[in-house]
Image 1 (cartoon, rainbow, N blue to C red):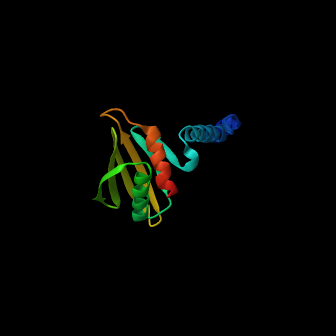
Image 2: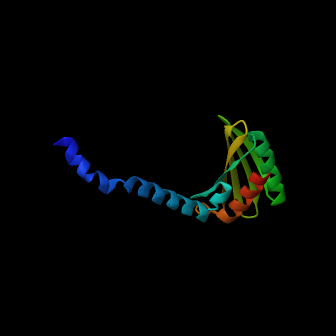
Image 3: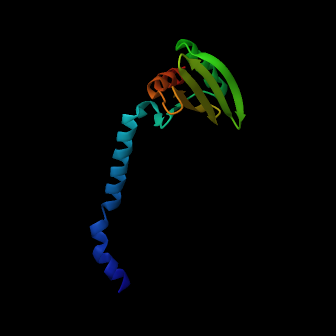
Length: 136
């Protein structure tokens, strides 16, 4: 009763797993394309994130160069521990925070948050800053 009964229905669901996997892959690639995912960036609700293919302190140096290029006044750098750095700056009415998370010896996660007010973030400017940091 057991195996024969299941064998009858096996053909109905044979392609369902592949169909689901394809739908998920297409959905994820569409989301990545909408957020600039081709460059390894992700839009987070209050900011944008991406991966720098450089070590933590090299990425911190790139962050300072990007600040200078975009006329951002650096206000500080703090080591938060466990391979995390916080670089802060100010430009006109914008408060800028860049968090750098060591991923490996040659890879750093960059999280950029550009705040205009307590609840208003400027992700467009954040993306410009992230692109300059990642490009080096």
